[in-house]
Length: 137
Image (cartoon, rainbow, N blue to C red; front, side, top):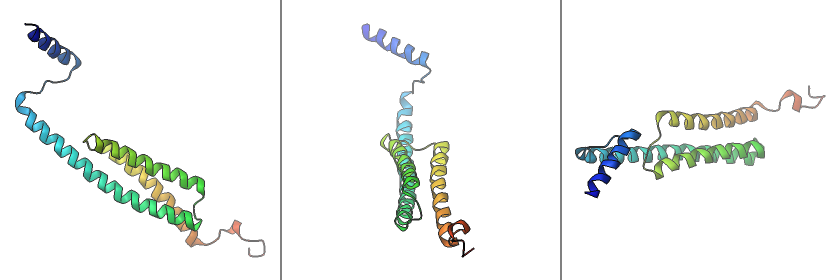
């Protein structure tokens, strides 16, 4: 008798919180959905791992060449780390990024890539007018 009261109390508590009680037939469908989400998360992680690796290598090359100062390079490295940690959290939970989260991480990565592109453009443009001596102007 006590068991029935506990079950009713729990189902009432779940109903009050708004969490739907899945019917027994939907458990296999839920498991399939979880596997799909985990698979999508791993695919997203692989995508970001490739991009992050390429950007990190590019950042290291530019830092060694002196195109980017230590401070900005550290901030860019922090952004790359933040993206990796955020992505890894989702994969560890067996989930995938939502479209908005994916756009957010892509935007962070794109900003780092744009900074690197500007540094490369400055290198190819040669010294700026202010960097030249008075006689060269």
